[in-house]
Image (tube, rainbow, N blue to C red; front, side):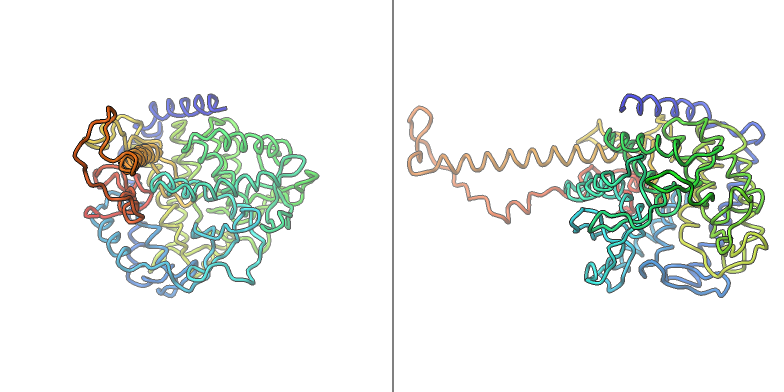
Length: 528
């Protein structure tokens, strides 16, 4: 399976090498540059209005020019927008905001937060599957419901494995892997999983199976986790799911919702969150299926100027009470991946349509507003943080073939004199489900350095203890040949000694500032 994964990645890389520096056949480089400038203007219109009208709240309310807390009261939009600044080339503002957040943000607060949305804590259950909500100060509320969505259980391996590889503490990766394995065991006899599950009993509460809301990023993280960690087990899991999904949910290149045990259709709808699927298929080389499904989704976009949350496939129209478009990124994300893999200008055309639609329909004085109803383009008073974290970022990357994140391996940084064979920033970045990039090479580099440090530490402790043993009453003053030698005083190893000898959080040598994002998957200023 890893051989198949390797071949797929090589095929995609070959496509990238042949297209990454070529504008689409119908687009000149000047066209690409013009759209990049328009997308930058979109970003700064939203970003500046957030800072002026909403900070330090989580989100901007663009119709009333104020802010609101949504996911945890820690300036979520600013955190989410941070790496987009770097991708747009604004390292000065990136550093300023990084310092600002380091000084201001405190996560030890009495706030109930979504474990899925904030990606921390709450795995202490009999099954190893986490609760859906946790209080950041007090932990899991005794009255907290044990019912959690599938994605809320299976969307941790990228971030938690990164923490483990960079800190040397395996517990983060272990709990994420345990949750994935526990979820894997609950699949039905036809190989599908449902939408919501009881994390205490492992019983399915909602038995609708599909690739959209409540499930989507579970499959995404199996694929991306397999690639980033070179993990055959994760790829095997996804391959089995993929077979079942194609067998029971796929109809005419659409993916429907079915009963997880019987495979009978329960909801013949397309959900906008499903639009990530073609992009994910491109990562494993399944380009033919990806193209067909993408074109289906693109027809819906062209019908309304955006993707409604739910779209009835038989009726060819929106579903009641699900007519909104909150400026989601998924179709643009797939366009970015597929353009990188194929060079087909169809995907650039989709990007142009997205820019035109968002600017025409959603732009208001204080930012960009959610589309409440795609039929009449009425607006809602909310701009979710993913607009700056994902939607604008994927749009910009679609039109920026020379961005450092698209590096095909021709440029890279080394880890420094102490570890010159450590390669960083050579490309192959993995985006988490909120479009924050991780550098797989940094994980392998830093975890190897971390392991080397621990091995040296263990050797030193063993050597120190062996000297102590040689000073026992029966051995003091004796050499191997029975000769007397002067003694060297060696103090016993204490717990304090062990703490002092632990590896630092960042075990790689100092890198260029622009690589620090990819090294840690988060941001640090130059003087860190």
